[in-house]
Image (cartoon, rainbow, N blue to C red):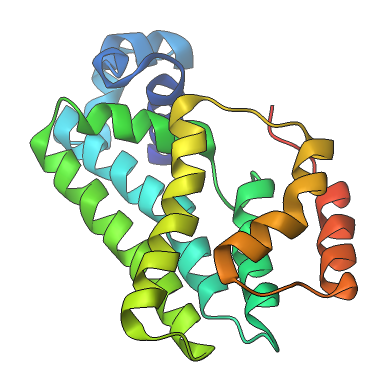
Length: 200
């Protein structure tokens, strides 16, 4: 048994059943170990909770910021970099994001962490738009529209299939940037999207 195994069990419980069911006894049963082994690795359940939030930040915030910082010849290509997070579950977990947001509804401290993460993500995307000569206020609004549109899709449980996503890629890029993507940019993203294994 390892600390990582307990964290993975906590993540699974959070995603599948919510924070109320992230319980030591339940996880111990899942892991087929004694309840007392939890305390070899954690002082208390709150320490595990902090680890779950740290995992969420690494998993779902870092890739968005990294892709927003990537160089690209056009803003439409830059937005495609961010779109990678929305189509590749290895980069961003919609279910984990939804689970943490549900947790934030009942825990003010978690809500603060979520709000800060949202601010960091939007700020990174806004800075991306500014690199392509959008005025500061317009860049901020475009970043909010791009980001919260997708988070809203996840929160509402909307599940457009792959073919619909591909069909709407060009108009989404136009809506978010006000600029027309090249055929090469669209085709490159379609190729990437067909290569990625969809989430569950």
